[in-house]
Image (cartoon, rainbow over all chains, first blue to last red; front, side, top):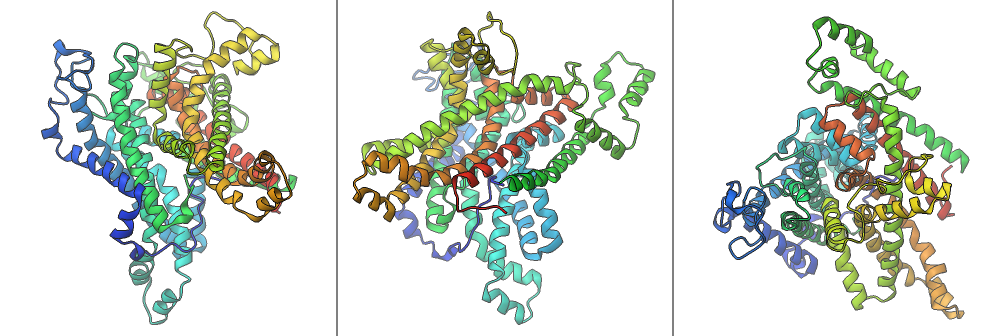
Length: 293
Length: 334
């Protein structure tokens, strides 16, 4: 079935092949790194950068157009949109890292078990993965949020779960191939147990597809969690989350278009940054993953 | 080919069974009592008991699942808590809207994406190539819901060229045949309906299709570049074929395969994006039905929508695989 994550990995390059010099010679990686560094800086120094409190309401300042005092204008509660966008970077980064972490962790556990132990365990895990991949992403996320209850944390968990099958497939493919290598056989021959084999020999050698996959998906996870918030299943007001800011912006689209414009721009810039980094890492570590998404 | 399709259809059965198990038991994990939801605040304890008994909620969970599955096989997904209509009827109303939207988005993505990809590959390192690849990067990264809002703002609000949402002008009446207004208008030969539904379809289709369009353009460019460097292209040129014919007949045909794979990968994103697009453009499709049902805790409806959406998704993937076999004579799934 032609579903996402059906990428077959043959000989992923070793992580050791990656040097800072090669990374910094790659123009899209450098551009992406610069953008993401900017977003991280905005998140870290938000209190210093934001001129106003992101949640404080000021009813005399409702729906002001962008001006020198309010660079991005104000929303229907008179809150400064520039400050909210800056603080939103914190949420977006946490969302990206946590959701990606959940997907990578679960995916690696399932993929390693499936690929290394094979047979029935493999069959059970892979059939479950097939079932999960039969759901359109956002619909699966909506069910998970419906079960857990709508909140930003649960939206992150949901998106992490939605991406787990893709990680599991990529990791399984990599494990299947690494476990046939001579050095694994040699280690087994001198009596290494499964745990030692996995931790010392298999895992370090499948890191590069995991890293490439993780950077390529961060952007999508940020967008999809914002999508859940946009639908009312994620962050709740007055949290300065970009997706829920867009949802309010939609109601004022014709009268105050800046409310929806700037959070959307912030999502776009952040995602472009992560995608450029992902493209760069993929080119250097795993050219075969090209076109996986 | 028929044997391949039959075998693939048989493989779908366990996957869909798995989906039904996951959805059914998932819904049972949600706190809340369906009987209570149905009755609202008015019900007495006796009423609640009666409803629970009627719906079989007093039976063990696995019995409920078997009954649910038997209903699904008969096309009976139960009654919606929110609208009190049969779930299947509501889905029947919404599905054609989503199918129409997704197909329009897909058509936009494939046609425009391939066009950009081929042109960029035809003139590599030109301003056209660089410009379109920057556009592609932005397109892949734009959230569907933001694209939708911007399109509405510019073409609906500021320029006033296209309507601000809905599937057809409210004042128009037409005979429902398929439920997809564009198709119904075409079938009935009613051009007012066709024109109105096309005007309503353009913006949502472009918004929904833009991510896939960008991905297809990128993939189309790189495979075209690969193919254009191959020996048989040189041969085709050497025997004096017009460049246009070389590109359209020889190169494009061979560059299509990875694009078909990509379309398969994009289908899931397209169906997900439909939820957001339908919300922004106020389209009464499956995606909007899904989100209103989740927010209203209308479990029978959520179950039905998710099962149908998953079925549509896997069948669409099957179609992509079949297309793949059709396009590449080297592949034989036996």
